[in-house]
Length: 298
Ligand code: GLU
Image (tube, rainbow, N blue to C red; front, side, top):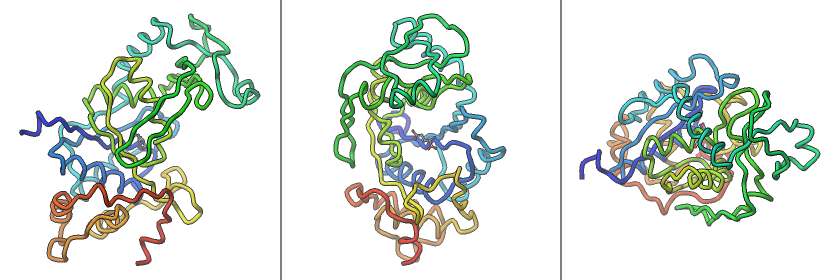
């Protein structure tokens, strides 16, 4: 089967809020290896929809780090900053079908209601200075995962009517990710477990927009020694591009994958080729929250 008619299309979707750290490199590697081991395509999407959180130049630095690590994607990078028309079209459809509504609730009002929006306001026309939310019914959505046990969430009591467009005019991650996974024909999402909790609402939004279902795999994210997820915003150390082989071996160790013999570990391309051939889904760690120091110290 040629790559173009492969039923597997995966992706890596970094936000340019800083350079890649070891946790995000692990995410890139896991999604790359799973795609290539399944004869699939691997696409890259720059999730630059949130300018206030972005760092100038981070997008180019991320691309350069991926290249230096041999993580070469198929086709052109999809920039979310160029996708506003598509997001707006999806929003209009949801507003017209009555699934989305304008919301002028203040943060304080939301806090007073326990942080959830549960059908309180429902403006069908824009009163100005509003967020747009998706109205969620009292249903339980169960997200299946290739690695984790099924995750069931009652959308109304556990999530609430969620934001599709923020009050400051920026499109929300949940809307953009669903619209773009469909646009890029993504069949398989492999990403860190911090986003597992978002999956039921993404699946619900996919069904509202009549998009095809996606298969998910959430691997446990690496955490700092303080127990929190490594994050670009909290300035987790950027990966050192001059140590690409070492970084890839470290990431493979974290993913509990077999390591190549030294003769096959002399370049990123060789390491990746070997790792694709030896990719073992069943070996992936399932336990959440392993501290990064455990991997640096052995
Ligand atoms: N842009 C998100 C991040 O950098 C990833 C989104 C996704 O994989 O769905 O954490």
